[in-house]
Length: 150
Length: 419
Image 1 (cartoon, helix red, strand yellow):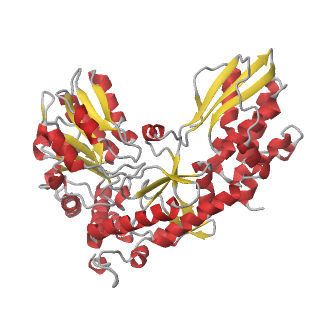
Image 2: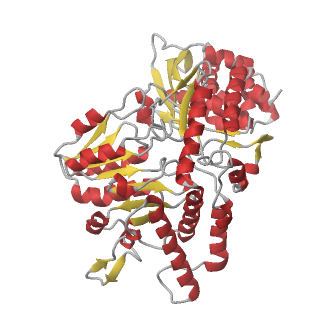
Image 3: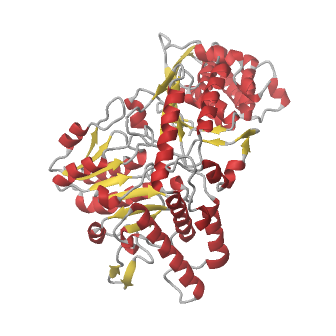
């Protein structure tokens, strides 16, 4: 596979065209906005936290294929996870897309998210892949202001 | 310079010999991701001809010294070369006198300089500054800062769907409270060439001075500040084949003479005591501290280079490429051009169907093609068109129709990759 086709894998393209959980859940208690001023990508992540558990999660907004697919797959992965599990996943995902992952990070936990491994060959796109995750982190921490990946 | 003075082809006297020009730019031999570099991001910064690189190296190897200081040989040589660069700039924009040429870091600093000196001295509470809806952030934010400080109001003349200034609205917004108009000569995001002469006449009829942001214009159009009649004109060296870190503010002599200094320091003074300092005359009054001497010399070499090509031919070449790209890329299925004014220069801004510009930029890069993607530091323009970003191809003297074809091929490839 070329680096390009590794980046734009079928599953990533599919999620970017038909994003999952692309909605505002009926009840949300944590919300944050994420913005990449460099390219104009902008997403809002909505959480319905049930104690420490992510009961429901959705997102809205616009951006490139990488950022949108990443947001979509993130929401799929996180439903039912605890805050601590979500934060651990983000750390692993971050290492995956920056190429800092050790072999043992490739465990079952990242699962489908491993399709984003191709991002590490495109350093300029790491911010796209992590925008939704940074926004999630901000929502979990209850920050109200927009987070920026710049 | 004489060896490159004439770049005409035998075919059409008004066009450039791009093949020969390309040999003047060492970086164009590069391959990127195994592909021949197709550099179409000239609106962000242009590549540098050997004449510029050599002039700067020669200065550092043979003439380096501080200017306006020593009586020693090198200092005099450096001073002479710096003065000569200023004279070259004067000639390039047809200013009346070299004292009207202030060296700054770039167009951004030029706008800030005028806002902080002329602006602070002349704009008060309730006054207005008029700009247009197609400005780069660098011609918005310095005025916003001034207005906030002074309790003044920033007014914005609207543009139509094609990206042309609405002259009627512009006229209505000129009021007894307007203290200065500042407008782009050429829009960096849309390519629109503004009808500056008309705008300046309209403003001057009410005694309002006009500043022009010429950063995107000087690489593409012959500029004559006296014929335009503008009061200030700003541009960056690096977009017109010069080095980064050097730019120009032109100001009419009588305005520069009245304006307070910008920064305090060496070279901008006539005499200093702890009680009182008297300032130097323009342009030195606005050039505190040791300037970017090598940068000015490099800029001088760049402007001599394009003047030797002939700015009329440079403009014709740019128009030909833009027309070809508009036709070639504009005709592609799903492509939407952003900015369709009949009078444009240098820039093709577009969207390729539902492919996000960022994805397009990544895929083109793998084809060796460099374009700009994003909001182009013109977020209000993006908002006007309801888009977050566009892809922008911008041209220079060394670009060819074949490179436009490569861009079109890259867009097709992107469509393939993105499915």
